[in-house]
Length: 274
Image 1 (cartoon, rainbow, N blue to C red):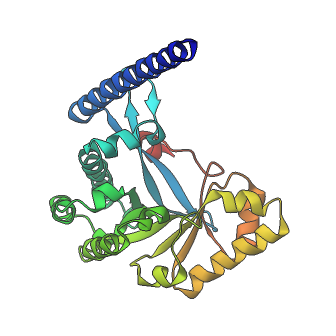
Image 2 (cartoon, rainbow, N blue to C red):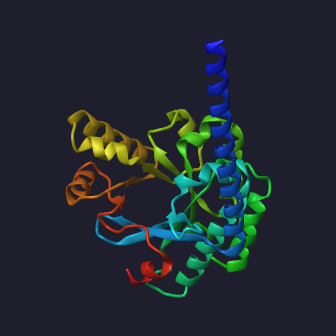
Image 3 (cartoon, helix red, strand yellow):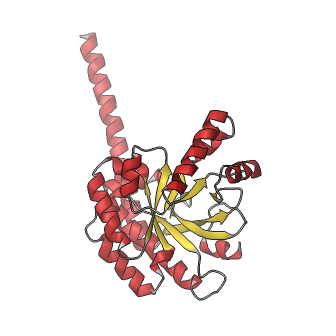
């Protein structure tokens, strides 16, 4: 009888926790939906820099101005957005702001060759309307599509890989280019890599962090950079925070960086001043 009572109490507690969690998720989903409609989805930009100090472009990074006043990064809500399909509307809003930035840059000789990288969710990529939406946005703003780069994480190719690659090819036909994000943390083989319409390999920051501590990790990072060159791709390393890391990467043959050493993500107005 005691065991039965304890079991019932545990089930009641689990159910109560489930109800609280479900309530929080529903409330957050409603808030996120309102944010999309009310323009509370912000885009911050982090510069990408060459070894000679010249800026090559920026990565557009999603932020949500929550009703509490906090500025939330994607880790706090991206899974909810993907499960609720709000990611499609959010993705198009990020694309709109990125294209408007490219449009503004096109009128200034100092910025007209800079690129903007935009992250694409697997849910977005498999949306049948995405290619037409991208083409429409490019045409509406009159931007040079070669300056718009889409980033897809390597892990996204672990499921429905063939469909993903087909959609990547379709988007490339609009004139945009592709970068493979977080390279080295997913499951794609070199054979798969050769079939992708990828121009840039973004090497995950953990490789750089380990390379500063271990000689074997340093050799591995050097080989990854070498592979990108053999395949005719540009290697960009994320998470560069110190001059020593930058100098190490230059020594290993990489001269394209992104990280706090150069700048943190910032709103468009701050980016212009920077």
